[in-house]
Length: 233
Image (cartoon, rainbow, N blue to C red):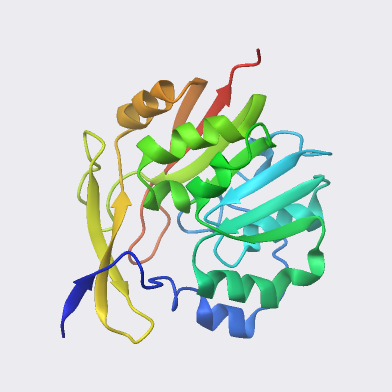
């Protein structure tokens, strides 16, 4: 089968589709770890009451829906560039508007267009993994209000077990086109000190990285949970 690399085809068409067809519930829990079974929860985001949030690469918006229903933010923008993911999120959770706002847009474009708009930005193996951090993190800093917080979980190593990259280098990982053809997409799997350096360069402070252990089962992986703040002026 021919393998292609593309940036225009929706390579997220198949992701989460089976679950979306069977599970329409708003999740009653929120996890950062790769296994989605345990570990820290939304408390890492801080007090969300009355806050403006954005989920970067929200997929079907399950994490965003949890926050909108079980916490008291002013608004959660669930941002995703994939037509398929946005469509599934709309089917599942459009009824949660206006507290949950489903945004179909490239994450970097969205952040740049909304300076000083958010108190909290987060990503659960989302856009931070699949967007060049030298573009995404400065855009995130632009979109955060002074004193705002960025939190994301990302792979501590490749799913194959290979170590993370020692510099800002993307790897090609397998994907599928909507027609089922093999393709690849870029994923940034970086070592702790690399994330710290690129966050610092984007203007973030109080950068903290915690490694959370892998769970049981196939393709398990340790998680890096990263928090950073934008210094209040």
